[in-house]
Amino acid sequence: MAIIIGIDPGSRMTGYGIVQQTGDKLTYIDAGTIRTDTKEMPERLKRIFNGLTRITQHHLKYTDEPIYTAIEQVFMAENPDSALKLGQARGAAIAAMVALDLEVSEYTARQIKQAVCGYGAAAKEQVQEMVCRILQLEVVPQQDAADGLACAICHAHSSHSMNKILLNSSMRGRGGSKKKGRWRLTEEDLGNLR
Image (cartoon, rainbow, N blue to C red; front, side):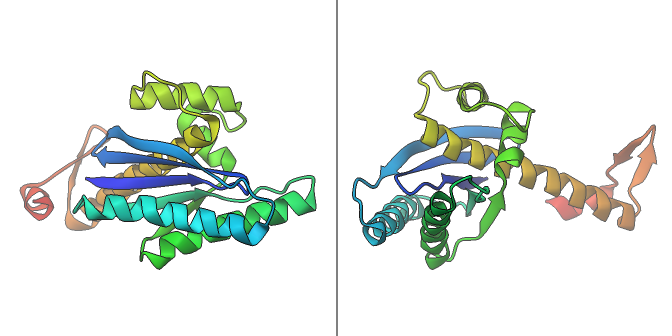
């Protein structure tokens, strides 16, 4: 089991989503936005840093499960000023997580949409709808919060797939038997998994 915090950085609204991963199952824990209603960029960055720090510390206090974080990478915007502000907001979010000694994984918007919708150029409304389906939510989260949840879902799918690949490669080296195109666990492999 693990807790995954997904972050969709923005200079005016930073979305976050928190899920619990238990094997293949994902459970919704929390989602929301950190709003920065000020014109001063240093104050916005402070609010992003403090907001994510408070949210994460709350979950660190009430769980013994490992916590992982995932953040969306900066895309190249048409407006260089917007890209710079987005990069600064993203830096504040990463700094907040690293200050709490958490590992941060990064995903492109295309990777996140592909993991959630199966299509890398999906619209924001499609992402919101698929997040609701995957997490069995009755209420549609705000777009930035849905993007944060989508980032967490992407990390869960990526880490789960990577664990399967690593398990399969370790079985090949340990003499796992192959029958009809599938790897079978030997008794020794089962003992090592426990």
